[in-house]
Image (tube, rainbow, N blue to C red; front, side, top):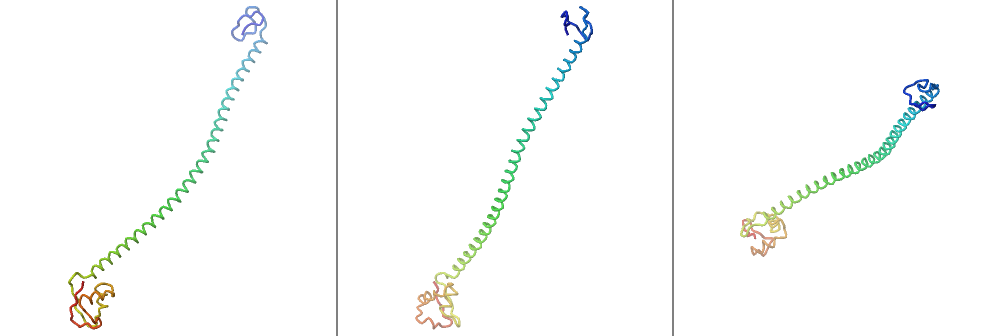
Length: 174
């Protein structure tokens, strides 16, 4: 502080100027009040800055938490949708597996029929021995799997009277 009368620089809190012997008590008191006010202003400024930072942090947190809630809701909806889609795909896979099983069964049946047909189509030159009660119709059903092929047997054996077969006759099958 400087003496207001002689403008001499004074160190410390003295009530009289060492140079001009002026009473400085009021000035020291005012100077101390100014120092306190400056400290309070500094504290208020620091507190204001800290509060401003806190408020900005809260605003940012609030805004981001709102968007996080929106993102969370969107992710929940996406998860639900994807779960439903997975369930649907599992059902489709199950249906397709059933179709594959059915097709395999049908293929096996068709292969069995083909094998049966091949077995029912006798090799060239094979014969059939007529038994009691046989008719060309019955023989064709047994040999070819189709009774309408009786005419094949009749032609191959020159049978003119299909209803009259003799027991023990060898019929040629084609």
